[in-house]
Length: 185
Image 1 (cartoon, one colour):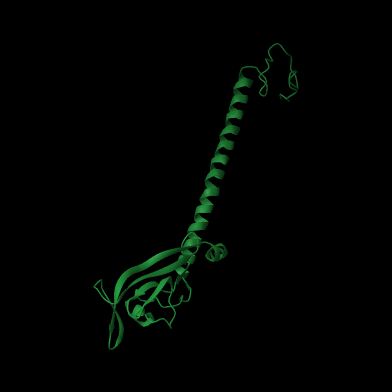
Image 2: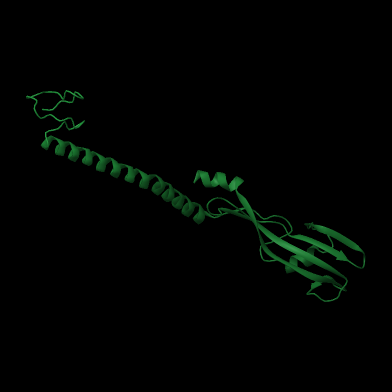
């Protein structure tokens, strides 16, 4: 779980929640944004969220609303960037923004289910990544030991040294193999 908190600080990605274009109309009540009709200017906006954490997003933050606009009367244009509350289109943009998106970044939200689920999945993957090779290694060692024991028994039955396969026929009772020095009996 500590690793996921560490990853939440450094492994982040951004995803676009929504985007759109609208035209600006001036009215007696103020500025309104309408869908693509000729008006007094144009607005493009984007809403983003930032996801942090690995292997699952454990902390998600809604970024502030980004917008660019070009107004005809009074002439005003602005490049894509964050919208401040003092901007002339701020209240109109909030009206079309998705739920939970404001002019400034929201508070980071921790997703405890993903933290615990991600921790469990991570530990299970690590367990099997280590356990499977260890089981295969142990199986190989057991099979090798059995093979060597069987091979030694076969050599003894043929009258040979169980270790080096030296032919012991014709030798009297010997305690050691004359070739390798292995104790025979």
